[in-house]
Amino acid sequence: MNTNGSFIAHLIELRTRLMRAIVILILVFIGLFPWASDLYAMLAKPMLATLPKGGQMVATDVTTPFLVPLKVALMAAFLIALPYILYQVWRFIAPGLHAHEKRWVFSLVASSMALFFCGMAFAYFAVFPVVFGFITAAAPQGVAVMTDIDKYLGFALSMFVAFGIAFQVPIAVVVLVKLSLVTTAKLREIRSYVVVGAFVAGAIFTPPDVVSQLMLAIPLWLLYEAGIVVAGWVTQKPGMADTIKAGS
Image (tube, rainbow, N blue to C red; front, side, top):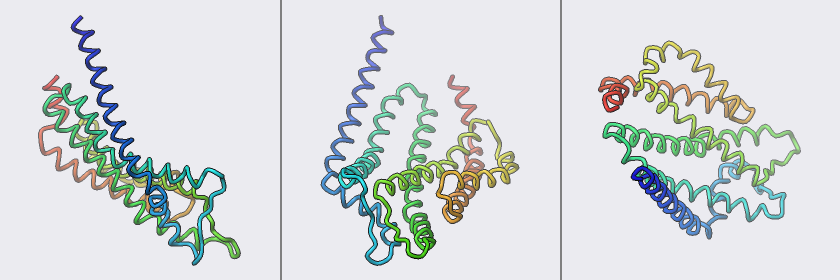
């Protein structure tokens, strides 16, 4: 009976946490809705800046001019509300963790979120201007570059996700080393394979041009090297795997 009561209590708490997160997300979205068009204009700025004078983007569907800015506002609302959403998740799982587990999970989640935002910022401020400038300059003579706003949004989101995930490499490296699944020496040994894999990932997850592929592959490689450095520093402290075994 106590077990059933505890399970129901956990379900109620989970529902409460989810409802709080959803309410905050909706409130942020409502607050951003009046500026949905401005948010899209900000997102499209790197593309518009590379078009010839008087160049513009187009909307090929009837509802696209309304729905696309709405999607951008929803995406922005999610990113703004993400720290609070993760906080609610943390408050739900934290009571079931040991002290050392709380410290590591909190650090990893916070670092992961910060690196994901850094990846998005890198894509927007560094990659987009170079890629769009290259694509626009490569257009054949007599061809006007007029990108559909919905397709542009899909491209921007895919690039944000690709670079956000790429910037998680240091986290993955540190976790693997701390769990004693691999050593820093082994990571250095397989460096050449990782470099090749980085360029393969750049070819798969970016547009078919050399510039964007390099701008994903090179950061992936550098982030891998940074992960090795951080993992080497962290492993000087008591191993995570040992503390987990001690707490179990």
